[in-house]
Image (cartoon, rainbow, N blue to C red; front, side, top):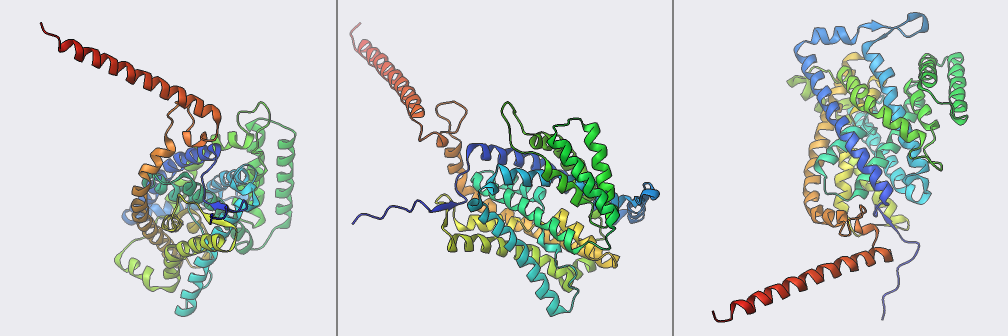
Length: 466
């Protein structure tokens, strides 16, 4: 009896990407790798500075600068967290907009997987933190700290370790991290907003409206948008809502679809210009003035004994991996989606464990959650660093094991026998590709026949008597 034909409605979860999407993922990985390395260097520099010259580190971090009349007399640390990090969220907003209109999230069916995985990857760590602190009698204020994934660090580790992993897995992590950023922004806006200054908020909304109108009218010129963006940011900061929300709001307003005659959309162009500043300066400076915590034997012991810090570590290491893997498995189990034949569930778990690196946004939320307790804030930062380090090491081992399996598969995916610049795997259903390959094989066959005839002639000549 013949096997039933597969249903046309069956979809492959984490299946092969389209060529444009694959190119975008490769470019993003290259950019984030550099940013991740700089972020790591800044974090190490902060730890060394804070533990060798703690007095100078604190004096520089606490040094205030800015116009007090505008409510912007901020410390260097706050300028890094509220100001420079807004640039990071601006880029995150553009990435999210691109995914919504041109990437995986534009198709609701395809968007289900990363959205569910991201939601589970945020709710399970929060639940782990909640249970640890309910049991241990700790503060519940830090429930949101382990919910965030650091896109730069995670993609940097993946780019270095998972060089041969299928591009669909890397795209899954990228899309997951973008969705994760969106929900982290919502958490900051909803749960970490104090008293609201409605006049300043109204001014920020008006400024955003002007920003959107100028974009719709096609007005060009950085000298128009940069001053306006600074005004919007300042008003948003004074409104009581975290100023990074202004960055993501402006990023979401940019058009990320190409029109006739455009090589790049405005969103792609602006992202290309701003990303180096974000990854190369803004985020590393934030890390430099946020990751500087005193590290000692007792401090490391407290990370694993105090319920607040233990909840953060377990949330990042265990909660993230279990939540993302579980969300992906549930989606494949209870929807029409099924895992691609190219992948195995250990691959998904390895990438899910990588999302436990929660450096940048976790540090930011940690500062917001415990503003009234500086000592606990430093301990939470140490817990974020420790949890992220454990997740990075664990995921690196898992990725290294899985990477070996895909090395040969990656070579097949990159093969371009007809030398037209497009991998053959994307052309196997095109007749012109097969015609080109037939011509190539015919030329090779003719060359082999010529060589055989030459060899045969040489053999006949050598057997004749002198």
